[in-house]
Amino acid sequence: MGVGKIIQIVAVLAAIIAGLWSGFPEAAMVIAILGAIGGWFIAEEDRQRVLVAAIALSIISDGLGAIPGVGQYISNVMASLGNLYAAGGITVILVCAEANLYTVTVFFRDQFFHLGT
Figure (cartoon, rainbow, N blue to C red):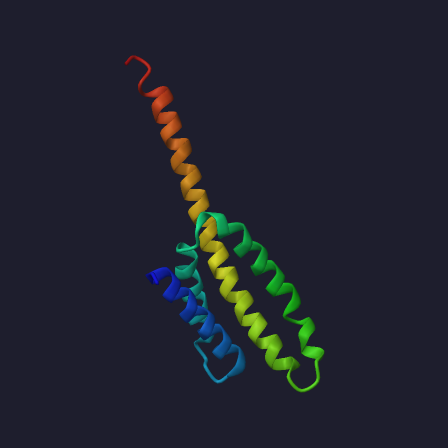
């Protein structure tokens, strides 16, 4: 198990704990940092799934509060997971933008600065 997988597991556990226990004032900051770091380790083939999961979790988190007894807890956990995936999604977007920027830069460097060679 690599470092990325361990960070992702710790991030999900932190999001679940933050959703169940609301007495942790820095929970949002911890979830955002862990999500951003975990997003760095997302494999290229899983990046689209992370973005879709972030959107889906953000949408469904409020609707589960209507379940009697446990709805509020489930809603809080889903909202925390949605925030975790949103932070990871931002990192995924930045990693993809950086990769595309590098590709464009190399293309233009090869096309315009090596014309005489």
